[in-house]
Length: 328
Ligand code: 8YV
Image (cartoon, rainbow, N blue to C red; front, side):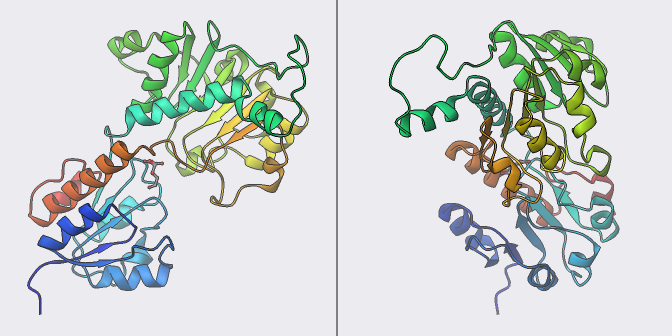
């Protein structure tokens, strides 16, 4: 029998990364695109000392109930709403995520989605592909909304939110933000951003960008009452998490022209998409790809592996979420 520590790799990762792990660990891996069922996950966790997972594996008391040797679960994701952190701490399991390495890639994508949404790029492509383009026209073109010199309102001003703000400055945008806490004066200055209440942000922003973590308190941060505050010319961008927006209410607002357009990378119940959203014309849809560049996905996997290896070597992982468990 192998004397190497046993680990679970719950999701398909790059082959070289898997091969490297196999040098030091006995790897039990799921390299299919099928997510482990809660029962399979519970059983797999009962047999290993560490695990690499991504946002879709729910790690709670039930998943951990038989995991007697487990020391660490490394998320290949910065968001960790799939973790019940108190349950992990209670079970003595270190929780880690992948901050920083995806900040700029995700902010780039948020801006791309904002531009595509405001300037109706995917709708225009459908127009061209659908043979509807017969003439250049002053009025009968897909007319969009400007980004330059408009006001962008960012809800959630962590690393990625600040990345969006800095990109906005380059476009001459006025940047306002709402967050659970104010940034330091130095950070506000670096982003050219002004703190406002959520209500003021919704009322005054031309473009609202959501970059906040999903928590129970943030469930449906944007629903029908919040959309009602927004300008009819405004766009809404969600690169945060499904569940932050009430997708049903958003679909209705888009269909009724209450706001101009929306760009969504994340959805309630993804990979399912609310059927009413699919019927909207004024929407850009993406399959949760904000961090999806080859370089960044590799960096995320490498950081998750670094976290896992540090924990299993008895060291403090670089991006430990529940510091209180490390000393216990
Ligand atoms: C992940 C993300 O790819 O990091 C995050 O929070 O949303 C993405 O970068 C996704 O969560 C899958 O793990």
